[in-house]
Amino acid sequence: MLGLPFLTGLPGFTNTKVYVTEVAARIGKPMMEELVEMHREFVRYYGPDTDASPKWMEGEELNELMSMSQKAVIEGRENDLTSLVPLYSPGNVEECMHKVQSVKYGEEVCFNGIFMLKASSSGLELGNSTWTIQSPRASITYLPSSVFVSAHALDFDYSSLKENDVILFSDFSSLNDTDEDNEKLNEHSMDETDSSLCRYSVFRDDGADADERVPFVCNNDDITEEIERISFICSCIFGAVKSGGSVLIPIGRLGVILLLLELISEMLHSSSLKVPIFVISETAEEIFAFTNTLPEWLCKSRQEKLFAGEALFGHVELLKEGKLFLFPHLHSKGLLMEGALYCAMSTLEP
Image (tube, rainbow, N blue to C red; front, side, top):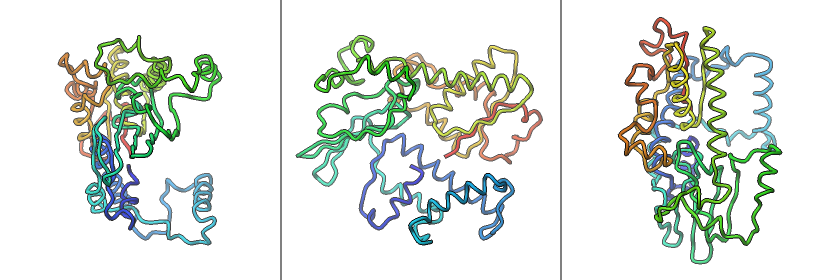
């Protein structure tokens, strides 16, 4: 999503629409704007035309890495750097969003009077999706990194795999390279003619229990592994804070930071430690507020919280209790208050 303005700025995208899910559009736009602002701050501090590298970029290892990156970009182009372009501007972001058409899960849209496009949940992250393209002659599904059962996002939708002529498979983040996982898959391998995988979807109206109907691949392994990883990170955070240290955690996936905040809060609550949590991002306030208004994009357990009158994510209570603080910049007023060095700090970065 962050690279979309480069793509929509090409001549071939003059009259072309870009289809994205509503959540991806709502979250992607402020993150692109934040990236532009971060670059503006960098230029304001170091200057636009300076040849000298900032101190944090000095060092033999970093210089070697930069040289390798430049070689990879330039190699084969005979020093032609026309492919390197400056970062987009706020105006480019607005132009990009004008070409974006947002869709809901399961919503069918017609493109060019011929193709039907539909997004379905991939389970990996809020708004992430598999895409099905149907034409009069054939149908194609693009299957990206997916998680069958998620701790926050809507579970993987198996209906996207039905009646396809071609499935473009990229990666399953839920399947790793360990021998244990490979053995498990071999034990439960399916015949290519077995259609049981395609008969079920998270969009069922028969009231059947998911545990009784969903095939082997749709179990709790994904959610268990995800929680175990985050719990391990939390234990490291707790150890560092307990010893008087500070923790800085850069995070890319929004769902991960929401889960991490909940587990950190529970761990601190069970102890006698009173540690403030700071999130530094221009988009944090907007995105955190938005995540509590999209129950239809969340997993079943999160949706049940809505009917129980509870907040969808734990950060809502943290904000009310004064344990979580949102700041747009590192130099924001109040961030450098006494005791800020002893905190669990999280940053939302594009």
